[in-house]
Length: 432
Ligand SMILES: Cc1cc2nc3c(=O)[nH]c(=O)nc-3n(C[C@H](O)[C@H](O)[C@H](O)COP(=O)(O)OP(=O)(O)OC[C@H]3O[C@@H](n4cnc5c(N)ncnc54)[C@H](O)[C@@H]3O)c2cc1C
Image (cartoon, rainbow, N blue to C red; front, side):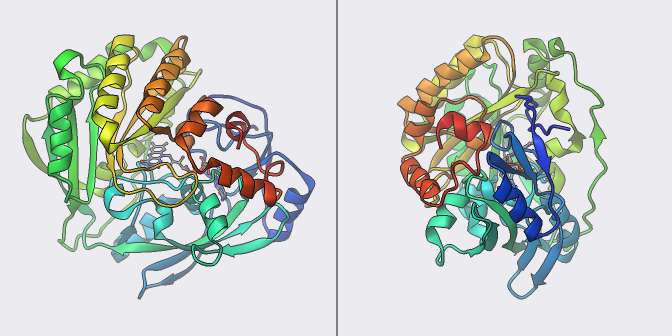
């Protein structure tokens, strides 16, 4: 059976390889081209899709834990949820986690994912001490930032295009509660939203949900959620059972009106001004994981996430322009998440730069890609970039303008004979 990504678009035929030993994997790599590693398929677009797919998820052993250092050694197919299940009750949490816990450690390194605390902890690679990777010649290398700097900079954020990550050593952070003290700030427009983000910068975690159907002077109104862990010794964390969407919704179910109704319920029903709540890890970090297969609400044609980031200096103007264009287009997005980012790292294709990023989900329908092409022009004009792990359609030209280190990445792949061996639909499209 062919594998798909989380956006369920595109649907392409692929051969899926599994391996049990390093020798098996070496043989797969030696005898095939156009290979791409696949973790848990939570990337939205075509970065984990190719003619030949290497499924890494079954490699999910915990190898060692150094309690003194908080250093965990695991295989690359371990899910973040599995780490939480075993280590939150012992008082440890992930230093960096994205908005879903259902991703593999290999996928977290390959996309160099970030969370609600990028302005404090940076990307996932910043909590990695070392990883081992099988390269295009079938050799296995232990990679560290100091020992093999080019391989590190190419692999962290390199979307699986340098080889197959086999295991990693990652630092966890000490916590003394599975609860978070959350403050919610309701704002009336983009200006208030920016002021609130700046005012709460000292909080380690922050994220805003934007009403992207708002118009005129209400553009950019949001609910900003900020928080930090409590210190109450309550660590009784258990993974919750998911309720699942059993089938693809008909495509008409998600339209401007249903998004408007959702926004009214979510924004309209929440308290004005500033309010405080105590919430658990899953509610704060992973609200979407509560519903299994929620991607099916977008219908059988699938959906995509458009995520861009703009430098701080141009963020306000750029966001205003983009939110206006979306609101005018009438193409509503349930999910419109705004985050503040700290300094960029050195990795050649890592997404974050210092500024603001917005992520929007859209169902695949007529006219969508034309709208996104227009948004790309605004992103390029304001010196921003698109996030590869969400993307399924960005052009080579737009991509290149956002990532100034692209030539270093290309040269490295060529020099190490990686470019025909490891390829995805996306790498072919954007020419990497
Ligand atoms: C609900 C939801 C919320 C999300 N929130 C965020 C967020 O807040 N921040 C964020 O940064 N991302 C976020 N994401 C995106 C997600 O974290 C990334 O796409 C992540 O890389 C998916 O990991 P995966 O294991 O599912 O990998 P896949 O989707 O299977 O693969 C993703 C990429 O990693 C490569 N890869 C996977 N495993 C390996 C390996 N072992 N060796 C080498 N390369 C490998 C693949 O080739 C591909 O390029 C979110 C996704 C969802 C569905």
